[in-house]
Length: 334
Ligand SMILES: [Zn+2]
Image 1 (spheres, protein in one colour):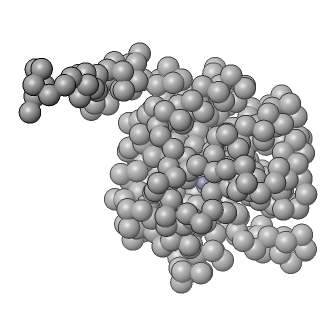
Image 2 (cartoon, helix red, strand yellow):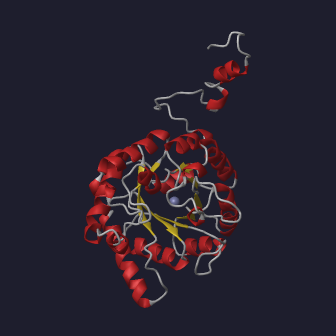
Image 3 (cartoon, helix red, strand yellow):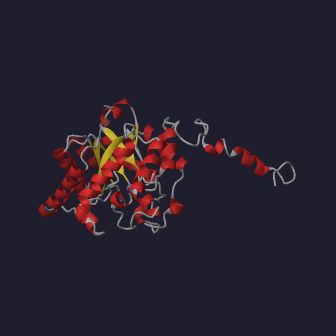
């Protein structure tokens, strides 16, 4: 048996994977807007390929591609009755690719049915339970992209009730540094830790720049393991979350951050005391690879092998740059 997530975090930083659903929409397998994971049964190869890419880029954890995989959310694309099957298939795909090279994290996310009422609570709890059961065998669970603290807390309670593996719960902040039900970043970190989450943190919605204030507040609020997984789409102080921009959902391409900007995030997150450093929507294998290198996890298995100590722009491309600067006729190739 290899080391579990908590042992690895005690030994040092753990590098997560990137974002699946937005990239899989770009590749043509996911419905924009719905962003549901039925492709785990309809196009399993597309999921396998993304897992492979993240693994070879250096990710130490592969997240089950079950984002928005709750029964009511899948019902919006007519796949509610296949919820269990989709979650189970997604879990098997992650495990198959991870082998003994990476941990597999189960995935639970916002259900869009949360309200602080007994009936909503019971509906949402039942949906989490179904997904937790279908994702049996994962190394730990990640409950993510919650913009209601109450839903995040309920997710944690269900993981603790239904499984024996560690729980990582990450909250998403959109326009303000408060959840929609009025919890600050510090409240979230503190209360989720007290409630038993082994790892707490924030993911999605914000780019690294707009996520740092959340990370800082959470780091001060808890001594436990902290996770940060920002999006790789540029936001602004005016609209600090990517789904609030006119580029969302299908004009995001020109807003994508470079791999080096995500590498800068990895370095800064490390300096800020983040233990689980990953990324979310818009972060693909190139970003994870550069983050791995920034954290000293250069992957020898890569097909393309630049000088591990220098970014590509300082090595392979220098020759072309020098050539470009030479005036015509002075040894410049035509
Ligand atoms: Zn995301």
